[in-house]
Image (tube, rainbow, N blue to C red):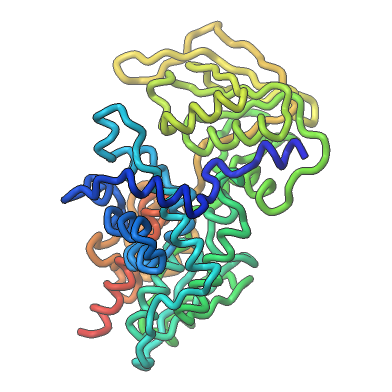
Length: 431
């Protein structure tokens, strides 16, 4: 019961009265900064006005015309730094319009009522393959189906929607909400999803190339990266991606660790630290090798972590996971930045005891699979190089979007890139 209470949604669904009064606060700005700040360019003043005039159907259609995962993004987007962060009320020290929750109010209604969003045109006789049923792949599929293409999505896992399902903290969005929206879209647009269908070797790629007019790569990123220190393979030392997935797919019911150390300073590290505290850990320590001001995490994510009870230690770098078989602590060395370069302070090593370590230090690029595609250009960081206006890669039959291109941005960025690629594929096949 305590865990259920701790993991209650931080953006709960509005009722009709809340939505009406919140929407009435909007100034409906011309050239609205909220719309400019949205990666998918949703006409935010329009859908808020539609909610205020009780045109909930119109509001949902306005949202979905720009963002095919409108409900998911309303929940998981960092609205505090995007649309709501750009709200003009911020300059007046007035709370910004609660855009994310208004977006959820409209789109949730559409999903529950099975609102008819689009009229799919007759088939034009061409088929497209999409590898990966994450936000980029789903968005690309919706765009292509709206043009009349047959779309087959090949997903390695047994569920869709990538990190939106497996890697977003459960207090931001539930699995049920993610799956409901994907199923709503599948019924609306009529794309096919083949689960447990891993595409990885050269033969697989050659088969798809022979059968489909174009292929979209929405494979995302892989598991957590190794930090290459002694002892990181001990028991009770996990990668952040795997840790969050465990909680999302198979919730922890046994007594949780007493003392947790989270290594990292990004948004994923904040999620892990917050989740650990909410799961009942007696002490959670967030350890970052640089200063607080150098963390990549959004300020509101760090505030959420502090509110959950996690502590922070800065300018410390892990050099060893200590313990016999299981992690019993982390040995750190203190750091400082000199001329922009991180330096270790000699003879400053110390150990913090714990019984669980989570490494939130990034995800590996899935370059091994990409080497099976002839002529595909991959940059030094392991990301696919694309034409940003079309999503087309150096191999003209392949298009890409999402984390495999941008290196790990927000769900909303993946949705945008998938839609752009869908339009790019249509233009390519119409030449």
